[in-house]
Structure formats: structure tokens, C-alpha cells
Length: 486
Image 1 (spheres, rainbow, N blue to C red):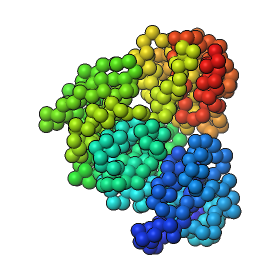
Image 2 (image 1 turned 90 degrees about the vertical axis):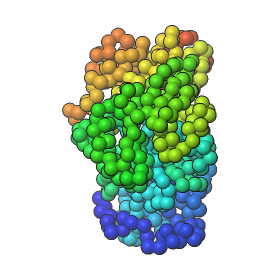
Image 3 (image 1 turned 120 degrees about the vertical axis):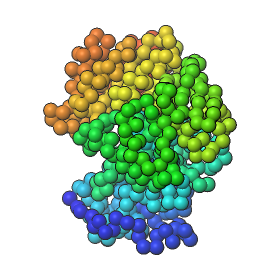
Image 4 (image 1 turned 120 degrees about the horizontal axis):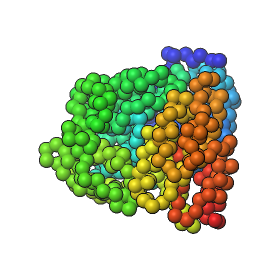
């Protein structure tokens, strides 16, 4: 176990000065470069002109392909030999623990080091007005929507989106104007930087979509989660703005500590931005948005579900509230292509509609199932679910998953992978969950056996939705191949 010198948890002297003159003279090494956000940071660094290297273990597509395309030299593993001789700054990813041997070399060579959020804040968000999208749900989609709206308005925003946004070639871009839009995660920054990532993002405008209990591995209870979001609210400057979901009393309570102007959005009449007249339109949603100063717009979004409409309303309110021209909204939302693994239609295979979704928290699972049922009435919905995240593997949501999955016509449930990562006595009981769901549920040891059962049962007219925040043992690829053959 290695303890790093906390006095070196800074940018090296004159780093910004050299970066401003000739960033190609500086080399940045990323430990854990294969993570989604770390790969995006590598892309931003390369785009800015830095030399970029990294190390990781077991890289796989699409991150391995992206790193190859941007020509970042990547070393395998985390031994001391993976740290290049030429290195001005080390970025330590969230996957790294004190036990990683490479840290010994970082310490011995007295290299300056930062977490990913510290690096973003110091190098890419230090001269921009930053839009931080925070909340327990909807961050990635709302960030992608905001980036598209700002881009449609010709404002050339920089952004970092925590998923593959289909409206852009890459989920990152350096700002070409005065704005930077980023997904603000409440998870820890690094083992030496135990604060929420969004603390480093210098917010000007914040969107707060929701506040629920999550990340049970680092937050003991809902009060601790709420306190983390309150810490972000307090960072918004008086000339900034908070756009918060006003239909939830807890969100309003968190918003109350904000020193900046606050505007609420939602379905209820006491919101500043009201969503009304929502209509499903065959896989999408039409709605009206009413805002301050007589603002009104009739908008269409090619995504089903009330929560997607609310995400669009939040991004729209943040844009207009920041001085944007509301006439840009119609075209921006109507052309929104979405984000991979967010209700992503993988194909209509022999009459069986296959959808892939990132849902893993019970609220997201429930809303995803409800949205798909409304968008595709008449189709039998078969839900394949993998409780893989640090929180979903724990017992805290045992009963909530019964409700969340209850809207599906059939449930194919994988036993929680890597149960040893959760404390004994605090593990989700997959067998009990299947029993509580009743005859509609079947339990499987792995994704392959689950996939075989789905192929056996699915018939034309069905909708199969895959829900996991991981690879699910290659289930999506398997079903794409086998359902097509069927």
C-alpha cells in the first residue's frame, strides 16, 4: 500500500503557462485510461495538443478502439514499468486503489498527480461558463440534450458526456466559445480525493434532475446523498442559475441552500417551467413547455416517457434561462438522436423489438419499463435484468426491485455478479427477488443461459429490453444474432 505525497496533488509549476504556449511539450499519463470518462479526458487532452499515454488492464471495445484512433499509447497493467520516463502530470482514475504498484513509481519520482475531475476543472473548465448536469437519474441524456441545444444555437460548447451521444462523433469536445457542458457525478473523485466529482467543475449553471439514495458503497443513507448535492448548490455563484426538478420536495429542500437564482421545472403548477399536454407519438413525445416571462413552445422529442420529456424541459430551461434563443429548441429536440444504451433500439429482429438500456437503479428500471410499455402498446414486454452496480448488488433495494420489475410481462433475472464485492449480510438475494416476482420471473446463473431462455420464449410482436450498467456477459450481441436467426 502506497501513500502519495499530498503536496504534489497539484498542477506542476508553470504547467498552465507551458500549456498555453505549446502543450505538445507536456506529457500527461492516465492510470486507468480505459474508463468511459478517462477515455474522454484522454481525447480532450489530445485535442488540446498534449502528449497522452495511459495504462489499464483488459481493455476492450469501444474504449480500446477510441484510444487507438486518437493515438494514445497505452501500456498493459499497473506495474511501475507502465509509467513512462517522460511524464509531467499523472491523472489517477477512480479504478485505482492504494494497492496499485504503479503508485510506488509515482511517489519515488515525486510526480504531480490529479484526479480526473481535478484535471477537467483545472485545464478545460477554468475559462468557461460551465453547465453541470447533476442528479440521481437522467444525467447523461440531459447532458447530451443540452450539448445539442447549445450546439444548434451556434454557441460551439465544449462538453463531456458520460455515454456515446449519437449527435456527435465523440462524447467530448473542447469549447469553441464560452460554454462547457458536463455530466456532474456525485461519486468519489479518487481514493485520495474523497469528494463528489462535481465539486471540481466550477459551476455557473446547474441542472438538478433528482435526489435519491444511490452509491451505497460510499453514502450511508439518503441524508448523506442530499448533503453531497447541497455542497454543489453552494458553489453556484450569485450570477449563475439553478434549474431543479420541482415536483420532488427533497429536491426543493436541497435547492434551498443555493445562493443563486433558482427556477423549478416539472409537471406541477407551482413550477416556473411547466410541462403540459404530453402526448405519445409512436416512439416519441410531443409536449408544451410554459416558462417565465410568457415563454411558450410546442416541442417534439423522438424519445418516449415522461422522464425523457422532463430531461428535455430541464435542458431547455437552462438554455433559455441563460439567455439562449428559445426558437432553437424545436429543431434541436426534434433531431435529437439520443445516447447509446438509453432506450437504444438494437433492431426489429423477426418481429421482436430489441432495446438496450443502462437502467440499474430501481427508479430507472421502473420508468424504463413504463415508458416502453406506453410507447409500444400491445407488445408483450420481456425484461432481462442484471443487478451489477455497487448499489444494486446490495440488499437495500430488495423490495424496490419487486415493484420496479413488476410492470414487465416476463422477467429474466441474472444472479448478481461478483457478490463478494458487497458485505455479507448486505447482499441482494436474487432467489428471493425471483420468488417475490412470482411465476413471471426466471432466475439464471449467467447471461448466456439467460439469453438462451429469452430466445426460446420470445415470439414476433414481443419487446425485449436489456437492463444493466455493464456488459451482461455479451447478452446484447448474443440476442442480436440469435433473435435474427429465429
